[in-house]
Amino acid sequence: EVQLVESGGGLVQSGGSLRLSCAASGFTFDNYWMAWVRQAPGKGLEWVANIKQDGSQKNYVDSVKGRFTISRDNTKNSLYLQMNSLGADDTAVYYCARGFNHCYDIWGQGTMVTVSS
Amino acid sequence: EIVLTQSPGTLSLSPGERATLSCRASQSVSSTYLAWYQQKAGQVPRLLIYGASSRATGIPDRFSGSGSGTDFTLTISRLEPEDFAVYYCQQNGGSFGGGTKVEIK
Image 1 (tube, rainbow over the protein chains, first blue to last red):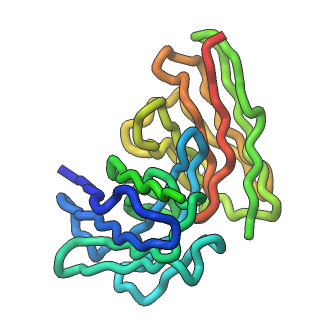
Image 2: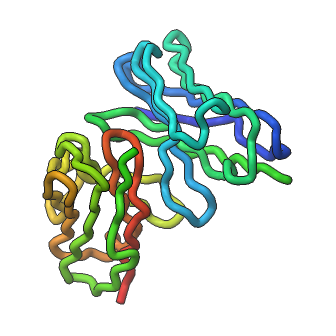
């Protein structure tokens, strides 16, 4: 079964850091772009970042540039999101998603990140 | 950065009716790069349409996508009870539109 499972979310103070992980299974991980997408409570979807199969290309939404870093370890079939200097606006469910034809066809269940002031 | 604007914000319809959802881009988007998703309350987004008009695996044919340039449309030919949800468009694996909620009238 194709599956993505996120972990690492939780409660963190404003200005703090958190590292999210996404474990992939059921498909050849290093054949796919991967991405993080977030959704603030009661709000719409926001693309955060994506990364090429070999990690050579990374893209970020402007609001997280310089604070978040996307990475992957193809030997562990895992995707990561290092989040620094967190603020209240970063409070959201963070989804890991698999790239497919310039969109995302498989999504994890998400992990909640809450930034408290 | 390309901004996607979806309209209407909310669509109130009855089961069996036709739903027409719009997604307008701030600049031209290749049809190859336009996708639509469905998200039901408390659930994970599901890919419906990619490449502006290709249905994803397992998506019923009552869902169809069309458009080019800056104007794209998602049509649900006859609404089923399970179709009442929020729908998002997305361009090139990046920015999403703000969503259209399809609710029961």
